[in-house]
Length: 336
Image 1 (tube, rainbow, N blue to C red):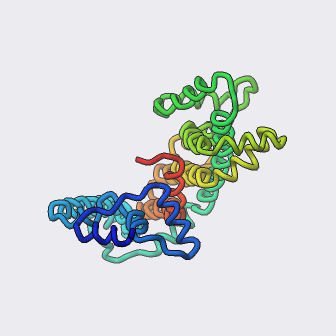
Image 2 (tube, rainbow, N blue to C red):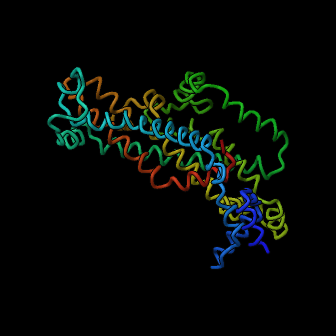
Image 3 (cartoon, rainbow, N blue to C red):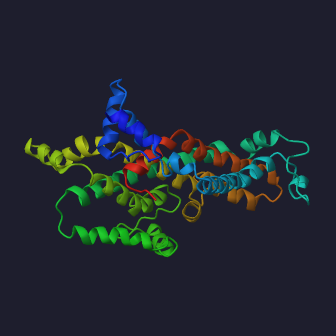
């Protein structure tokens, strides 16, 4: 009967029914068990923003392909600076500043990459950037996860005021508290210890991130309170509930926070530039900036090659974990 009704609606040109959340869940369970869901469930679960019936209309089809062409053109233009950087590293100094510029090097100098790798000491600076990113991930996950757990699942006095104070920092530009933050790092209150030329001076200011707390709190709110109450009835403490229940269920959100933190730490420039003046402790971007100023005779193509090496890790990170990023963003409620 259901199949007949669907065929009649399809022949009459009526759109298929929109699947509810329960129908999508049922279709997913049927696929996992090896059974084929009914045709109306399969069709409705594949329904996108614009249905195939609407795409049959000439005006809708033209508008759809027009928007698709604009988005494709915008995507291609974003690869322009990346291509110019990669090709510029293969040119000589004369060809880089040539007018009009060449689209591709006349005589590609592939040795520029190997020379830049050795002359700029890129292994040392990339290792520093990796260690800075690893420390930032550990501290941000520790502080953000515990703070979000306290705001979401614990009964705290003044919890709403604390939450408002955390989220109010998102409205303040980071440049505003740059000087007070540098003063505190230069002479820590109470203990009077300077963290200049110390990786802790980069890690500690980034430990409490209001955005990460917001993401994790929104995810922790979706965890059923019955699980927390059942664990407490079994004698589990708040810390045990956090370690054994909340964290294992929050792996998608934690993965997103980890990826965002690594990328943000890798491309951070201004704060490490102010705190780390020792060349042996500087990350890659800060080192390239100093190399461009101190070594005036250094070929510009070597600096371009260094920027190419600096761009590879975040690009690979996104390509490898793009599914986890999209899945985590959907689960944490950060949809557009």
